[in-house]
Image 1 (cartoon, helix red, strand yellow):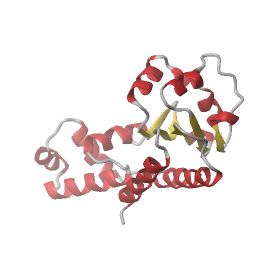
Image 2 (image 1 turned 90 degrees about the vertical axis):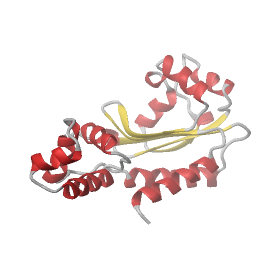
Image 3 (image 1 turned 180 degrees about the vertical axis):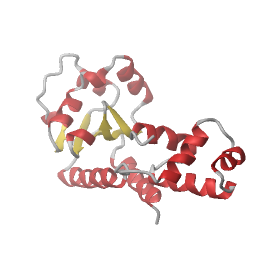
Length: 203
């Protein structure tokens, strides 16, 4: 089973465990996650984004302050913008946050239910999934010179045939390098791989 397939299976588990949706920000660096999964009500996501709540969210502050898991009801960080009360009005009544990893590449998540608190066993399962996702999506230390050349040639706007000719390789060799780079970068497309490599400061 491939790495991307394993990630998809873990995300499917989150769908089952979080009936009111979730947010997973993997490897937050330079104030933004490298990979994001979000299934909260789009109306809440839009409201949250329009009000720049990420900068004021007590759960984000909690996530950066420590590793571990906590029910939202147990977080005692001040919430002057009443973000948690507003979240409840969008159906995010009960939740748990899990934070994992070094502060330079922290994964911060939130999982919600509309009906009851998460049980201890559910929190433990969510924590294990978050840890596994964090490790599976660890950014590569580097790409090979050949992979970087392949990404750069496509990023410059060249088509496969022209790009391969410019590099002095066959078109199939260029595609193989791009496939390898996409796999390392957890990307479905070359465009996504190029952007992710830039985010990782590899290009």
